[in-house]
Length: 196
Length: 390
Image (cartoon, rainbow over all chains, first blue to last red; front, side):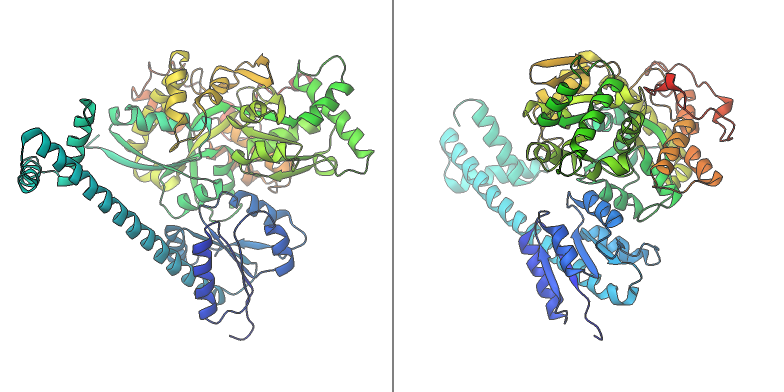
């Protein structure tokens, strides 16, 4: 890359910020800085004079930040990504991934596009990971609920563990529900009756 | 209408998102055949972006936002329309305890009787501050293109303060206002409820005036809708407006205030104490610790044409944008601003029996001055300095 662009990442999620920073460094960008809270951000922007600022879309400080870009005399004015809307697919992908970016006015789109693409793919990877983690957690929770439901049935109906599980599975099939849902209703009904 | 329509809407967790939340959660939308899918956002920038790329069909918006979008001001400009007003009033102007004490000293006969008196006391405090080495007073608003910003400037200017010279006006997210005030980062703010009430409850400041007093019954939040949605789905829009009118009437009924506060307060919606929502709903504001004042029309959700967009209001907001250098005046701009507040969809929804009786709607008074012609009256009703002339 001819002249290295200076990039600033502003993300309150430190892990995600680190992952994006690593990705940009791997892609050959040497001037990358990360800020994870609004305090000190303005100072950093004034010192670093970044060409590109990547901000997580859900960051509650975006209105404040955009206002600062608009009124500041101490920095070259960054404008929101591709303000001309000429690349609506890229904008859509960024918004869907949860990325917003501000780019110093006049910077060529071709130079910014790879940075944005990198941020988008890393954001997507992070949310995929956290989704998988949440799924794994709920799977674990579901297994616990099924265990409790089995215990309730064993105690109430004098069944052994396998019979209790079969009973749960049969009612799930009869009602076209998931076995975890049937177990959850049973557990909550049982605790309502005061013996849970 | 054939089948149900699915409409995606964004909102920012403020008391004046009540109508959208009630419509989506209390069955008002379903009754009109609309599935209203609501998404909470933390900034107006994100609302704008999601509308811009089409993830949202519509959103709870600051009244000037659709105008700015149609004028191409700011990022991702998207053709929009405001087919309905969601709330009037609702914002409080709060100053820190320190500034309030200074105002009390400088206005010994009290300053709470009118926005004029409060503004004069604040102007005296600003002047006193200028004689010291301390930085000028710093006020925060929620967004540059907001009634908060324009009201605050209008009020200050009418009371002898030149906002761009005598004070600093910055932007802070509403939930952070009370802490910023308590910590001394700002000296005052103008924000929507419940944040003025929260600041007073925490002992961070006092409510010195309110939007309802600066511009009584001025539109605060509108339904901002993608213009292409209005064009391609007129029936769905009619149903949505009717549902929102049903919800607005429910929200404005005193008998429902407690239920509404409970509905809104939960963590996945506003995530605040229920008690913090009651003053804004009733208009009986706690203006300082243990001191209350009832403000007429503090926040209005429905009744007496509250929900019908008025092109004259759109033009007035444009004139405020021009006055404070957010826009450059042109006849075309004025026309675009007026057209952004388009009452036709609302009138159609009402004519179709959509909540005609339900909203206490008083009939569409088609005003010949609302046709966008520059000849119309430009100052709206309800401005606190109306008697002053200009």
